[in-house]
Image (cartoon, rainbow, N blue to C red; front, side, top):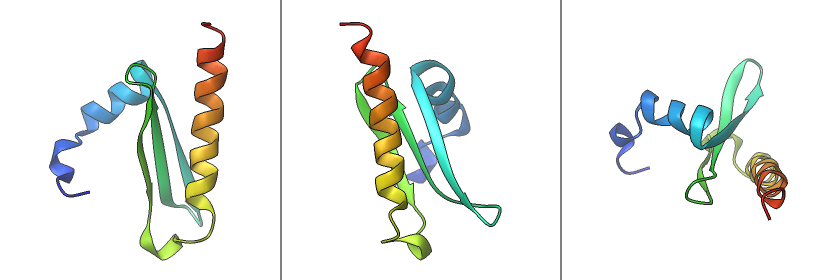
Length: 78
């Protein structure tokens, strides 16, 4: 992320409570990845994994959770 100051707590809260949903991956009480899906713009707005946990399937699991939730939500509107 080149400009993390643009992603405020308020902005993230809007995505989690109004625009979509978020999920985190926690290992040993540490958040090592997170993802947010946006129902308004129809995308995965954020998906990040800490570099120390890269290549362990965390990103794929977060991605799949977000897409499954998104398609479950939006397929009911068709």
